[in-house]
Amino acid sequence: MVYEFEGRTEKEAIDRAAAALGLKKDGFDVEILEAQRSGLFRKGHVKIQVHTDGPVSPKRLQDDAEDEIGEGLTAEDSGPAVFGEPDAKNEFEQKLLDFVKGLITHMGYEGKVSVLFREERKIGLKIESEYSSILIGKKGKNLDALQFLTNIYVGREGREDIRVILDTENYRIRREESLVRLAYTVADRVRENRGSILLEPMNPFDRRLIHTTLNDISDVETKSEGDGLYKKVRVYYRGAAR
Image (cartoon, rainbow, N blue to C red; front, side, top):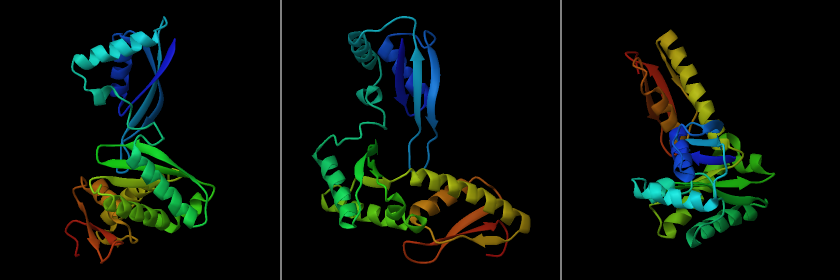
C-alpha cells in the first residue's frame, strides 16, 4: 500500500508516518516527493510517499496516531502540516479571505484567494489570478501594498498579533531566491575590489534577507541607508571606508 505524509522536515514527515501506520521507522520504504527548504517567507515543507507491504485500516491509522500523542507528541505535532487546508477554518480567516478578494475586485481584477500556510502568529494567503503580474507590480510593490493594507485591516480587527503574507505565482519564494543569489554575487564583488556597493531600494523584508544572508561572511558587512519604508542596503568590505 502507498500513503502520503507531510511535515516541515523529512524527519517530521517520517515520524508522522510511523505514528499513523503503527510501524517502526525501518518498517516501510520512503520516497521524497517534494522538499522545500525553510526561508524568510516560508517554513520548510517535505512531502513523502510511504510504501508498506500490507494495507492499514483507517481506524488503525486514527487509533495509533492517538496512542503516539499519548507517548509524547503534542496534538499540534500530529495535526495537519503548516501547508494545506486552503479553505478558511474560522470566521477570522473567512473575513480575511473576503477582504483580500474585495481588494483585488475593487482594482478591477478577478481572482481566487486561499490559505497558503498557517503559523502561530503568521498566516500566508495565495492569490490565483490571470492578472498576477499586475497584482505583483514592479519589484513586487503592488503586492507589498496589498499586503500592507491587509495587515492594517487585521489590526483594526483587533488581531495585531497576526502577520499576513500575501503571495501569488510563488513570487515571494522566487524573489527570496533571487535576492540570496544577488547578495552572494555582490559580496564577491566587494571582496574583490575592497569597496562597497549600494543596492536598489527594498522593503524591510527584502533588506532583512540581504542582511541575514551575508551575516556570517566575516569580511563583509551590510547596513541600510535612507528614509522611509523603501531603503537601500549597502554591502561593503570590512575595513573599507564607509
